[in-house]
Length: 410
Ligand SMILES: *Cc1c(COP(=O)(O)O)cnc(C)c1O
Image 1 (spheres, rainbow, N blue to C red):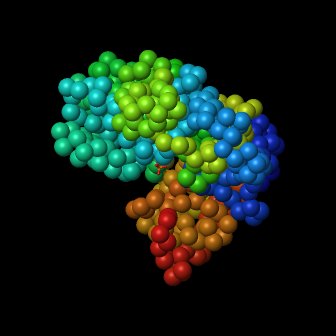
Image 2 (image 1 turned 30 degrees about the horizontal axis):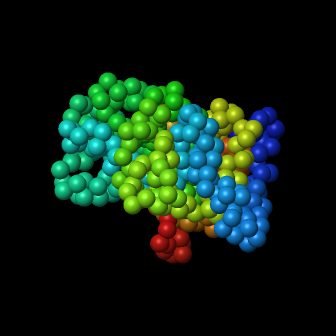
Image 3 (image 1 turned 90 degrees about the vertical axis):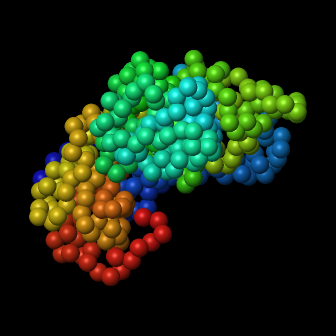
């Protein structure tokens, strides 16, 4: 493939102007925005303001003065706009794991006669751990039924209470059909909790249009909220008043500052708040979400697909007979915004790539994973990354002891 063609793709790219909104270290190609998004420049300024002026100067009055108390719903609404949610149906709070626990626990009570929680083997193991924990807590009265991802639609049967489905497989990038599965679940009286960790900010999501009732997701991947940034949860307007929050903390109380002795759930989605939000990290996310203000997610999707095709074509052309095997083999409509390959030496190859300025990640047992984040990734970046990958593969650079040493985080 010729470099002029790559330059042409970048010149014609309607999203090319967004890269300058991010603080990226020079000389690297960052292909891990699906795990930890890059730092938007607005975040640095805003955090300084929140720390020095709000907290530093206005102290506790900032809860009213700067409306910290409403930050979870304000940030939630910004996320809601990126996910096709109705106004005031998303709150920003806690972590994805905790939000999943909260909604799962509440959802099982909406279907009290059914004792099966359904999920698939393509789910992120963490979500399965949360389900297992809850099942145990409910004295094993419930069963976690695990099926293969391809079987999930036929497994939506009438004995299922809740299904926990992650839209995009964190390893292969396979994407479930949200509209279809949601429609089936409704005819069977099943609640689906959608996990949108690899969806939000990666492509258009239409919660309202698909009739989704419950969803959770994180904000440090494609939303660039920063390491451990607070997550979000969605409850459809029809369901909001039926949810009995299991973590019934004061922030979700109808009147937190009445200090009544009894808990009464607040109105709407906000009842799913629990304790005091982390204002500094939520403010970072608040500022990070501003990069989406003038972004059309359909263009993000189009560019993501083009980046994917370029990546796959270049690997085919430049890395033949190296043992790299494409794992994201699904049609365009059935993949998220990443590309994955398998290789028995995947770990060492990723380590060598990182050492040469190309940051992707490894997922056990043998997956090399590259996130495609159209706002700050150019076609030239992908070209450079695959050139470096090709050299590492041809010269077997990865086969050095230092690249085989395992770190704690992969
Ligand atoms: C990243 C991710 C999580 C992360 O959960 P945390 O509580 O933030 O650690 C959960 N589920 C899925 C599907 C993910 O991809």
